[in-house]
Image 1 (spheres, one colour):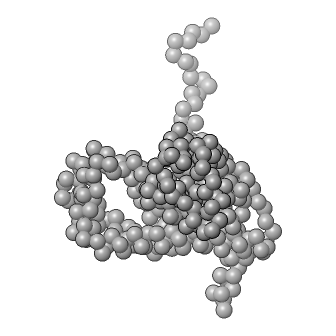
Image 2 (cartoon, rainbow, N blue to C red):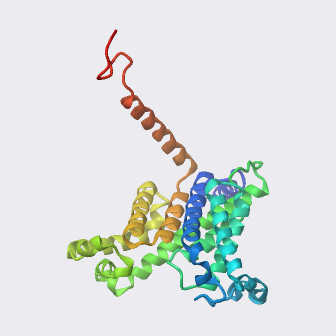
Image 3 (cartoon, rainbow, N blue to C red):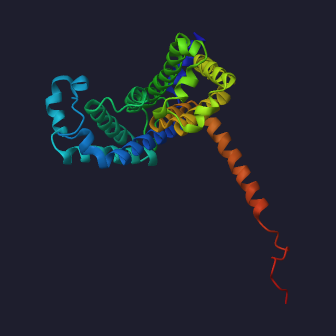
Length: 307
């Protein structure tokens, strides 16, 4: 009974992960802004009536697709669609009308994905789900009454996002563990030799059998144990490793959108008090650095003369 009471109190009394949610909003906003800025000039070619995309929104909205698909009927409308996604992304980054920005980001993201589903990099499914959950989270500036329905709904959305992260890592880890290339330790070598998905600097590095075997097994170990580790004191370490891992993917494999989405999900898992401690530590280090760089008042500046 006590455990149930604690679980209910966690859901109903105070909104959780406010700072983590903002970090997630910023990362997803940057990801969508990157897509909008790189795709806008090619919008007609990618999504227009005479472009390479020929998909329909029927998968998401069923019979309503005949109305929504009108957005693909002209070049002007697809340019507007990509621009709207960029505007929604800015709202997420700057925390302005975040619920409306989330709805606009989700709608435009789904329409573009439906039109050209081949233009994906692995982070699209989780982005779609997380944006849906974020519709029910409290806006960045909201100050809800303690124990209100808004708090309860927010915390359910937070719990859904957290569980989704665990599912992503656990599924990916077990799929790798059952794959021949990962189980024999050659996966990282094979990936690094694909020109489209690797930086030239990686190709020589992963020709070393020790490095490629260690990296392959370490990746599987990290992902399988992720859902367990983040529930223990290892959470900050595991998240730091994950963030470093995805920065490496962005730099060496060029999967920028995927990496931004995953980094945002990892930052989401840090608790509000952990953000506060990090902020206080950074403030102390900043004050210390400013003190070290400031010249003492009594020390003459080189080249000056005394009267």
